Length: 416
Image (cartoon, rainbow, N blue to C red; front, side):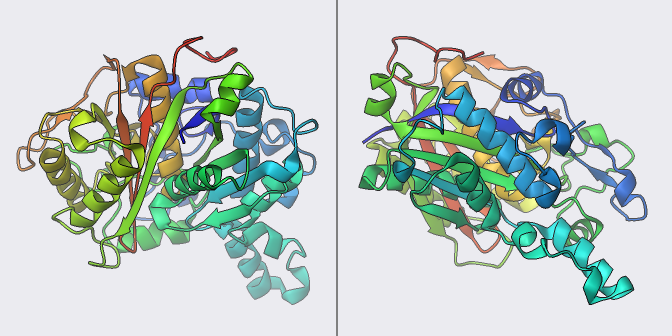
């Protein structure tokens, strides 16, 4: 059974909507900038969402009751459902599932309330703390607001969490457990403690004097990622159900695969063997072979080890040279939301026959095996099979496979 992506909602450093994010990523505009909240740290840059105001952009009342990671998820979920032209007041909520991934959950609320406890005592801690910080609450609040009474799940596979959520959604639909799934990832962890922790382990770029060029996947001068924030939520339905209501969708989600490196807590297996296993499982799920893949959305973190392992994998697994992009040069690393954002961008690339460029890729690292990276400008390309890679601490690997929807019409009604 194939599944259609019929709605997409994006709130990212590249923009507050799907259209704005897509345009920003296709333009290759980096969003990294100095961050006043990190001013005292060795790394003082981040990729924050510009001008996001919960009171204005979160579509539900009393947004103060949610952690930012949940506010972003609710905003993106609302966008996605509206984009899919679904009405939560009219649908059969018993058959609607929600699966949302996050790496750190409501960490900002947790740390803020901890400071209150230390400085002013237990009575000053908010009664909302637990529903704000628990990692399942983005999925739970979306289900509450959209009257979704099917399976409601939270995935936590570090930086693969959002992609794992979408893969889980595919399996729920194929099993018949539901007819619609709201799925994706969300993260809002730009906090001094998180930044300090990532810096101490050597994961962040320290090119702070030139933040706009600091995130540079596969580039010879890459030295780490830039921390970002955001949410990406997709509406998934069976392809038959989507076509029956006249919305074939942006793309078909045809395969999902997962694996673990079982190699190291945070470093990828340099051979890419575990990641390859996930990709081959996704291709088998899609009824396809690696030779058919003509586009890859790489995990592409801009770290030395990830990009080296991934380039090695891509060169070995796809020797025919599919186009390769990596959006973290624009958005930074959205942690638990990264895989969902990249899945959404892959679906859009398939729909629009356009591959966004890798921002800041000026000199492909000559130490890496050659791959066909799209740099500088977007590339027009008819895509028949695309694969999105997502990897995370703990050795988690997730791969998703996408194909074009059957035409008629070419784009969903109301698509940009």
